[in-house]
Length: 319
Image 1 (cartoon, rainbow, N blue to C red):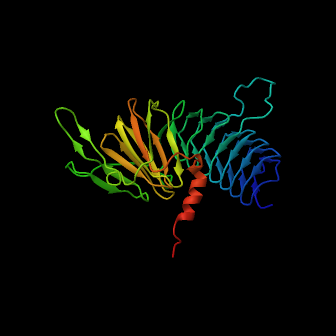
Image 2: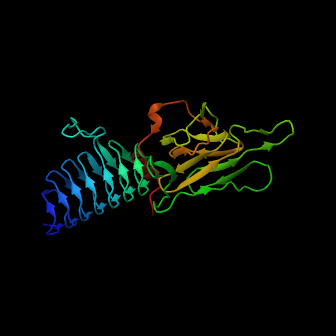
Image 3: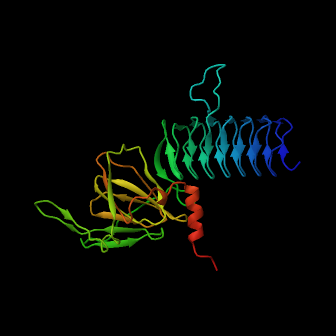
């Protein structure tokens, strides 16, 4: 056989990929499917209705129950606990166990608990000891009990995405700063301060570089909630937080930035084919969004893996 099973391990499945190693006191049941180049460490239990992709690492003391899927390049830390029944009772079994999916490249820290039926998004990072009670967006960094988003992973998935500063000089003239994310720019709009009250203004096709066809407001968002999590095929958006503050993630499939909108004369342009996420809303935040197109549900891309594939197709070929 082309995979390794330690003499003190029990591996009843024949669906094991090349180069995979199953170490001492691990137990893999017959129905489990494990890909290539995986590392199944000591005292790991893998049940039947389990699918494990390629290059997955499962550290010691983990039980992977029916209904769990681990995609390629996932890391599972020591003593992570998966669950598959939201209301367990002894000798009472559900008709079907909840499906839990850990998407490609995600990492789960030691002693974390994953409640049934959640999806952990691509390249997300779950902090040690966290209790994940709801699905986690792609690239999100979550910690705590219950786990909450504290940031987003950087493009290389090893560092957090750091906020981009709006350091655009000391005067009050409108300015634009380009970012490393394709087509995304930060804008400081004119600000007129007066003892009677301050005023900020923008001109369409000038300050806001398109003619909008609709606008919408986002407000009364609990601080732990996340908005966005999608891209548009053809719609451009211009975001201004007219009250309070909000953090905006912009991602073109290669580069990712985080911008903090914390003044009513600060804006960010998100062109088409930009994955956008808004989070860390202050309690009083009011986010104003101008959109270049009328609403069309089919124009949205809501799956991050699909977005990455489409973004890669749009890039010019390397020579």
